[in-house]
Amino acid sequence: MTTTESSAPPIRWGVLGAGGIAATVGADIAASPGSTLAAVAARDAQRAAAFARLHGVARSYGSYEELVTDPDVDVVYVATTHAQHHEHALLALEAGKPVLVEKAFTLNAREARKVVAVARAHRLFCMEAMWMRFNPLIQEAQRVAASGRIGDVVAVRAELSRRFEYDPNHRLFNLEVGGGALLDLGVYPTTFAWLFLGRPDIVQATGSLAPTGSDATAALQWGYGDGRIAQVLSSAVSGSPFAGLVTGTSGWIQVGRRVHHPTTLTVHTAAGDEVSSVEIAGNGYGPQVAEVERCLRAGETESPLAPLDETVAILEILDEARRQLGVRYPADEA
Image (cartoon, rainbow, N blue to C red; front, top):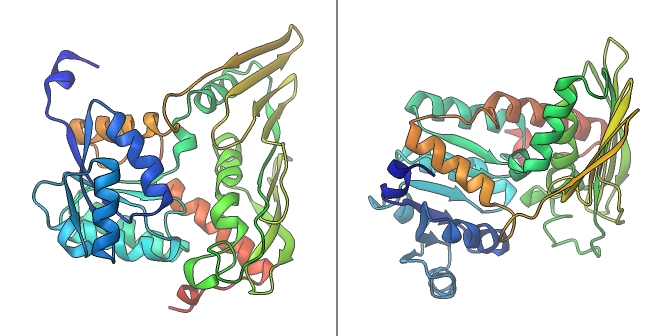
């Protein structure tokens, strides 16, 4: 941090939502010397107040409208459920507040395009909270792939799976709140594949559905006109130790243990294996928080590490996968 940055007043965050992810990310926001938790809001004022007491937040509100109009909030972190991201991001942007929107950014690409359009019209910072993009090992893997050390990239395999006990009211299985393995888990390996291959020419999806109609398992195969391929898997009914593999014509890159927050990176070439590891303080969201701080202080409305056009494009891939699987959200009918 430069002397100017260290002497600048902290970025004051307002958090929409008082659930688990708000607490997890909020802890890393509070731990950053460049940020402070200024306010939290929930639909239940008592829940917001309890969150504020537990996490040292200065103010709490029983409505989201109160928080986004608070003049002492510099940026809003949208930490509500998937189905609320579109509404709450727009609420903050229309109030003149920059936003960090938890993944998945919105339920579908149509909603995402609306949020992006409003952010750009208001010239306000907006970013999906895709924390894996800021992980130093993910960034190193991208540099290695771009350098040609493993030759030309020809294939990517990525997976994120975790077993959840079936409960029709759980967010993973409830279509009303954007349930399904793809939006909750699959967005990570989809993003991983995108980082190394970009937009596919063909997306083929197969999988299984829960009794509620949400996707329980989704396997995607991507094809490219030049022969490259990607295989992306996510499941909410089984766990897996597999993370991400980037294969080149003369080597490969592997990340582990989880694709969305790897702690090890192996680069294999003819010279052998080169293994790197990293430990990120707190819950792992610090690099993401630091990028928001940097962008706001620099007056940037988008992060070059998480371009909004890519956020929309990845949701377009997930939309197509859900279409093929037969998964429909109520918001898709709007």
